[in-house]
Structures are given as structure tokens and as C-alpha cells.
Image 1 (cartoon, rainbow, N blue to C red):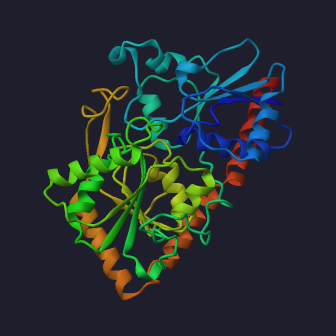
Image 2: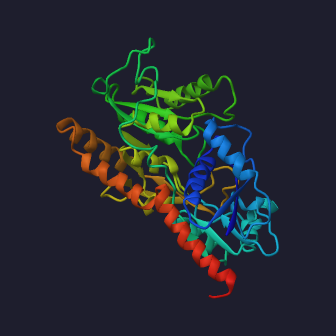
Image 3: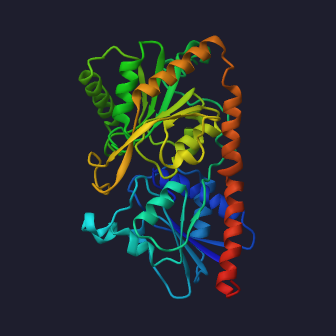
Length: 400
């Protein structure tokens, strides 16, 4: 079966990271001849190693008509061709997807575009519900992950980060000499990722020296050469607004990192924390779990599929309209707002337990990684894809 994947593999985005791991899974599927068509979704490039560049060029160099085309991108980019089985693969983060009734723009009128597909794939059950509530009537299938668990695993070398893992002269700072490190990855001005509320919470709920915040973030345009200053100015504004300029230290990483560097970055995190208002997969959370980090996260959206009380710390929330969030999040969509008080109570218990016993959460870390390995790793997703392609082959042959 000739399968063409249409996606963006080289942008500095979570979608591209997901796409690169998806290619690994597709290459493990037997009887699949994989082709690649690259649609750029961003003008900002992620640094790719030579091996990956050569692989993508080889896959993109194949020609001919595919039997199956997977659009791993936003529905506004979908194309359709006679005798090509078309799969729309996307995710969403709120209770409903965009439609013409609220957007007024055809590219964001998703339901009719998705209903032209033969079937829809998505990565979490909440997205499935959002599609169905919004009028998507095609068969919807769950394809989880994937995460490269060989890359994202405990024990790798830490990334050199001034003020966290090393001194200005590059001398290492031992882990035992640091406060508990709370990590986060996401845009600092993305209201869905909700970094402002997270930073305010870190600043006001913990005394100086009790924790250290590690933020892999950016503000606005990632290509801005003054990115570090822009991010720090935003953090200073947040701190001034809550009158806690002497709260815990926050270390920021604003450079665009390779997947290998993100894996090294996560070695420095003790706890990955997100107050996100909604996720369609949340690759950083899965990667953090694979690396052995504890995770504290809003208990809504994609993470409810894998972050249970046995393997992490899901935090309660209230639902609210997406009125504060920019387009394409609209007023008829709802999202979650985390209960900060509950988050503070849980974090206090975690810090106290770790002070009393450094190994208190070791089994939870092991179990959390195993969830990712079993259900979200490259081989696990390859097994899901293999089973789905077998069914698609039967559909195309008319046997079902």
C-alpha cells in the first residue's frame, strides 16, 4: 500500500515534533511504501540532524499516486483526489472545533472540510467528542502519540543551562545543590497554554529558594533576536502585577532546541507543571513522563487519557468560555481553568514528601514512563497504524 503523509516536519512547533515521531511509526509498518509531501506551517525552522534531513528528502522524492493520503495538518490544507483514500489527522483543545457560524473564514470552517475525508484520526478522546459535537460525521479513530521513548528516557546528560545546571564558567551545579525544579514548555503569551497564570502561581505560592522554575518559552516571534529580554520583561510585568518581585527564581530557555536538546532539558526537571486550558495531545507532558518527571497538570483534555492519580497529579478545574483566547478559539467553545488552590495544596504535599524521602515517588515515575512506552511510544503507535491500515485495505478491496 502506497501511503502519502502530508505534513510539516521542519518547523519549530509541537505539530512538527509529532510529525517526525509519526514518520518513525509509519516506517515500522509492514507492507507500507511511505511517501512524504511537506507543507510548511511555520517560517521558523527547527534544527534537524543530517540523518533526518536525508530521510525526509528521500521520502519526499518519491513520485506517483498514493493509495492512502494522510493529512497531518489543519483541515484548511486538506486536498482530495479521486481513488485516493483520504484521512484527516488533527487534534483540538476545546469543547468544539471552529465553524463558519463563528469564524466567517472558510479555512477555519472545519466540519465540512473534515466531512469530505474518508475517515478522521485524532490523538485523544476529548478531540473525538469535540469533532462529533461540531457536526463531523465521518468515522473517527484514535491514534495515540507517538513519543520516541529511546530519546526521551531518564539518565541522559543534562542540557547546559546557566544558573541551573552550570555556572557561567560551565562548571556543573550538582542536582543535590538545587531546589526542586518545576518545568514548563510553551509560549509565554499563549492564553491557552496559560503561562501567565502558572508564572503568577509560582511567584506567589512559594518562598524564594524553595523551588526553581525552568521555562522553555518564547514571546511572539521566535526569530526575534531580543527574545530573552522580551520574555524577561513579560515575567517582570507579571511579578510586578502580583507584587511579588522577590519570589522564586525563574530560569528561561528561549533558544529553538532540537528534539535531542529537549530530551536533555527535561533531565533537569523534577516536576513538569502545566495550567493549560486544553490540549489535543500535549507532547511535552508525555515526553516529561517518558523522562521520569513527575507531572502536575489540569485534569481536562488529552491528558485525561493517560495522566491518572496512579502516575501523576491531575488537578481539578472549572469550565469557562474561551472569551480570553485569540482566534480560532471562539465564544461557543469552552475550556478549563485550573484550581490554583488545589495545585498549591498538592505541590506542598509533594515537596514535603520529597524532603522526608527523596525516593518517595520513584515508583510513580517508573509507572508513568511505562504508560508512555505501552501506549504512546513509536512501536505502540506502529501497532495501531498497522491494524488500521489492514482495515483500510479491506475497505478499499470491498471485503467489508
